[in-house]
Amino acid sequence: MQADKMPPGNFKPFGYDTQRFSATAPTGATLEMITKPEYWSHVVSRVRPGCIVEVHAENGEWFAELYVRATGLREMKVHVLREVSFDGEIDAVLAEETAYVVKWNGPTNRYAVCMKDGKSVIKTNFATKEDAFIWMREHKRTMAAA
Image (tube, rainbow, N blue to C red; front, side, top):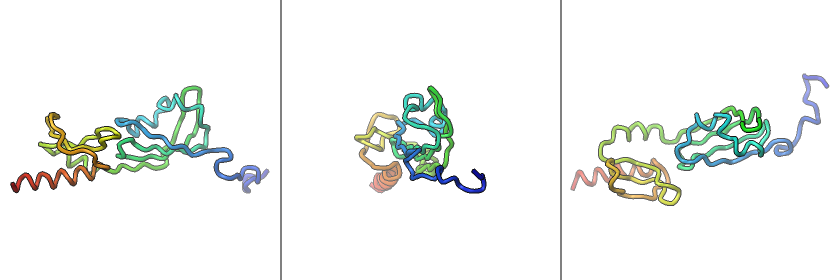
C-alpha cells in the first residue's frame, strides 16, 4: 500500500481499535505525577497505545488529556495533549493571605475556608476553589466593616 494514501483497513470508527478513558486523580496528584509511566501500573492492562485518557483532579483544580504512546507490564507512557489549571491566579493571591486558607476538604465537604492556624473551619461545601475564594474575600470585607 502506498504511504501517500490512507489504507482503507486503517480507517475505522473511534473505539474500534482505541478507546477513551476517564480517570479521577486523587487530591494531591499533579500533572508531573500522572505523566510518570509507573503512575499507571495498576490500570495499564486496560489500555493500549493510541488510547486517550481524560484525567480530572478530584478537587477540580486541573484537567489533562493524555495520549497513550506505549504500554509495558507495569507502565504506561503518555504524552500530554492538553492541560488546564483552573486556579493558578487564585493560588498566587492565597499564598499572600495571612488569616485564612482555602483547602480541599474531601468529596463530601468539597472546598472550605479555614483559619490559617488550622483550628477553625469557617465555611464548607464550595464547589470550586474560586467560589470559596470569592466568599472569603467578601467575608473579610464584612468582618472589617463590622
